[in-house]
Image (cartoon, rainbow, N blue to C red; front, side, top):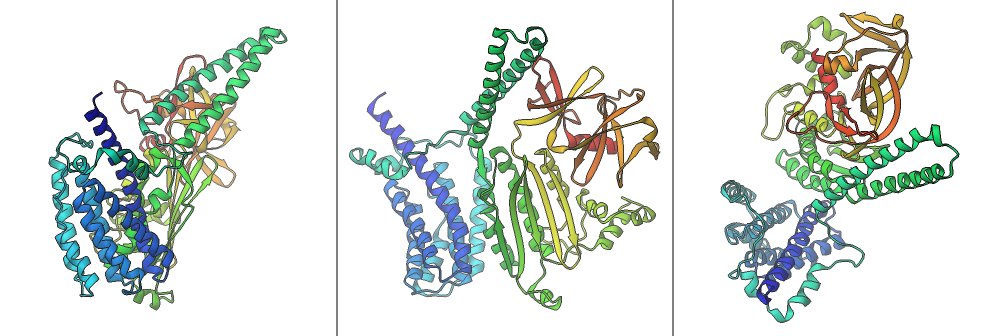
Length: 587
């Protein structure tokens, strides 16, 4: 490789590091500026914000990103005046600084697409200069300017080329700005890496997960072969050595699997930290006073789940701000503090992560929801009177169901909640809604730690063996045929104080019904507040199963999450509980 190619690779590496570092700074600025608005006297926080802007200014200036340098330099000027107490932190100043952060995001997108200078910064820099000079600022002008810039950017992205990777050409200003003599020294400064850490591409982690999955399958086959040989070779020296090696492979495979899974784990704080800004902007737009309290942001979740959970949470939080929490005037009339509280929390429970969104707003009117369901012919008036509160609240998840008197451009409580539930169930999760009128609402989301390898309960139905995700299994019971009663021609049993619907697993999946034996084994599974009894022939045991896609030929099979390869080499289906419940309801 020639010297020029080497320099281009070095330059690309430097800019890649700059983009990663700047993205982290921008994310921190968003949350820290919102925090500063609530803690205007927190000088340490203000200094941290100033350092972030200063770092972006210095590095972008060196790399020749002039537009980013111009913007961050003006931000730094305003922040410096705030540090020196020459300016006071006000909501109006915070509005402009937060808008400036949004413009930084647009400029960074320009850099990635090699389109520097396409975002017009004149309006935001003029507003920052006005603050610096002590002049009044028009909030509406800034917002309109940013909306126009984002609109233009969206149109550009739609028309842009499919390949959006960063490319450095010999004419790039970034290359011209760097002198070969100090290139390596600057790279050291830019990386700022701790010796004990290293960045690894997600594709490499995915490859490792796939290989560990294959290792788990091999481990299962080894254990099964060892167990089969036990009856005829127990006590033999060679067989004892095989068992010892099998146990060691089992232990190492389990430890390796856990280590790889942890490498893919990200803190949910990566998602949660975006919401102080969202709540702050929405509450100002709606003239409400809302405190967002976040707990458990250090809880870890698989990267694939983290990427998909953002949109449902945004929708739930917008609902709480728009229709859940009242205006200060209404809260005072109801005897509440004028400031509403929105709690966002996460914690681990077994092999699941629980995320809760709780507000202390007006809650949901059960009678209004009931009447709306009757009007939409989702239930009869007589049937509605027999429903529990949970069953009535469940109508909220029906497509297009809304109790909002007027629709706003922010949200409508219920509009789109069916999409939220669908997205959660795609992640093999569950969502529950509870509410108390006048006191507030709580949405609980239950998600698996990982989607790749799960603990499964193996059950047999005739010649077929199925794996049921263990996280959804409540218990197993043995019943006799005379315990089965029929409601609307559907079999049910009384399980303690509740009525449990029964289905044959092979019947609901493949319409393959058979006669009941003298004793029936029932696996009780749960999804949100619903329970179902699956009739199976026998319980085989618990095993770690690797979820494999069914492939394009078979496509999406209702009630089946995927397949796994057992220790004996045979393919077994993994039950999708969300799909199974839908099949039962539609039968």
